[in-house]
Image (tube, rainbow, N blue to C red):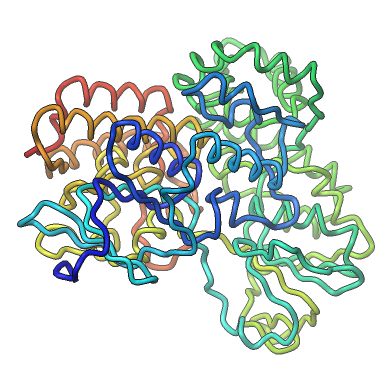
Length: 537
């Protein structure tokens, strides 16, 4: 395929037109490079284009989920609330795209199917499903951490009603009024859907396997006064976010040791009432390392959940986690989600020990043969996180080695920015970089795309054409990543954080969890030292 006649020759191909892809395209163009972006969606937005399901919204505060490289770009957009919904987020991404005039360099409704590296020429040949054959020096992936949906339930084509995956929910929506509706999955997406549609459907049945700790969201509206207040803090936000643990504005404020039991409870209650992710990311950091502290904080959250479920035994058993600690999974924010299960038109089915066997023509059949009949089925069944977006593409590096095969054996990268054996393949939001887990995505993606842009600029300034991680450099980063991850309780939890939701996927904590600020510092040190973990030729 590398010998195919090119239909276009560019300096860089950028995969994806979401938060990372748009900024990456902008930065590389600013260097004077010719860049072509590709996205399978029909317009910009990335996750905010695909995820149009009812209730989709931020769980990072709107004023921190923003680009910080341009003060006027930041201040000329006004958010309507603390945690806006998908339609407003999509409008914001259109605003950014049009402001930076990015659309002209992106091909939409176009999926990259293959990318092969030619060692003789030091260039990539990129193929698309529309017949494009693009010859490029750099192949930059901004495909996203959670962009490869899992579709692992049998019989989805057999259902006689309407069946949709949350990741491809129709833009025009579904008419759910008066209908029998099933939602499969109670992760962050399922929670948003369930709490939103419950009042509108005839009857809702939720199929739950893995229970989630949840925190109530407080989502005030923003008028001119609130908008002016957060915009006035631009310099502070820009200076703070890149260096905090989570890439959000708050930081760990308390230590367990030396704090009285009474004061600990007061602190937990105060932060809980904030209605944000602060309890997870800025309360007591020791809960990630010490079992007893994890259990104490977990029990605090469990008690909150039990109270809201009226201590109903079935609901508590199905929805309140007991086999892992608070914060070792992604913690969803919600609005009256638990109260949904107290409604007369809502049923909850625990499929932990009696799993879904398959979809039948009439509905969902469980392993014990029970058949639940529906008019509509909504599947919120998760993603092949971190690796899935790229392993579904035929990516081949030196000597024809396959990225799908390499990551099928062991998930390894160098800082989540590159992979040994694949020169000039540069990546964002892939394993071993901060992304999705314990990270405000815009903060992390801005840092990663800026590092990539600077690395390309430095490469050209030094008169070199290729950069590739050395085996030793990759070994060192993997060792550091694992040392950090394995010191925490996160490494002991069965979740998508470790790829546990994908059968056969190698186990490794997928995201770097040593802190956004620490990661930035290590990336900056790598660049300042002349990229010692890379071979540059």
